[in-house]
Image 1 (cartoon, rainbow, N blue to C red):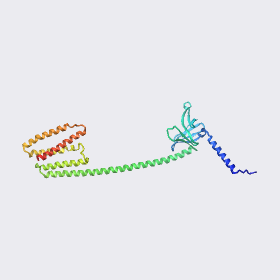
Image 2: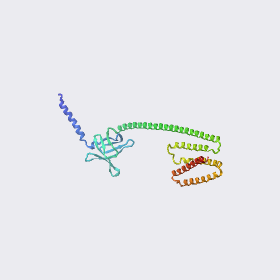
Image 3: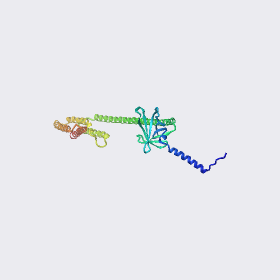
Image 4: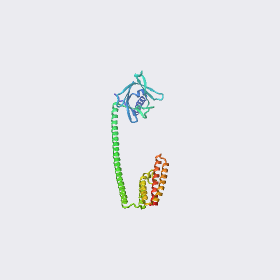
Amino acid sequence: MKKMTVNRTTLKFLLSMMMLALLLGACGKSNEDKIIGSWSAVVGDRTVSYIEINETRYTIRSKNSDPTTIEYILTETQDGNIIMEGVNPENNNSTEFLFEGYFEDNDTIVFIGDEEENRKLIRIDSITEQMAVDRKKDEAQQKKDQAAEQKRVEAEREQALKDEEERIHEENEAAVAREEEERRQQEQDEAKAKEASSQQNNGDGSIYLQRADRLEADIIVEAKKVAQHDMPPGFYGQYYTDWDNLLNEVWGVLGDTLTKAEFEALKQNQKEWIQQKEQHFADIPTEPASERARGMDYLTFETKDRTYYLINEYL
């Protein structure tokens, strides 16, 4: 039996013809033929369902539900797109739109006119195998998400502990400051009481002048704690009682030190001052609150000025 010999040129020609035949066979496939097979429906890089298409039926299943099977109609548009419609036997075999798309290649169908961007069908060898692969990916992603969530919770817990430590520290500092202020005030009160007990009130104006100056200085100190520059409206009005008490003390001393005639003349002047002060205060509106605060400031300043006037002029 003779051996057949084939030269290289002939071999290349035969291989080229075989390749061309395969290529022409693939290109000649219709959309009806190309769409038959198993597919993953994906959005971006996320698989949302699995689809099995044969010559007559369209079967879809999600990762966590049973498959649904219906007959389908495949239509090709003039621009080469395909439209897949399902046949609904429960509604007189009416058709329901499933999707419209085009073959990007033999293994990829790109949806068009879809609400979700980048939605595709990608051909797979086996739905069962692909579901197993996707399940592992989902489990890995779930573990990753759980780790990230745990890290976030731990970070929030650490921040909460830090915030609580800062709050306790601030409360402790505030408590120390209050104790220091109370101690300072107590020392001042004790000093005032000691000074008052060590001196006899003999009508000497210097004693009351010192008390008035000290009261004014204390008010200024407290005001600077609230505002560095201008005193807030209503702040000075808080000390009306302090100035009124000091004024009454001075008035009591004047009743003992002035002659009867002098005191009677001063008493008339005092009544006129009170009437004028009260009338001016009554003219100040009570609303809004800022006007009411301004009125209390006025009363207090007037009482302070009257106290200094009586001390300087009559003691």
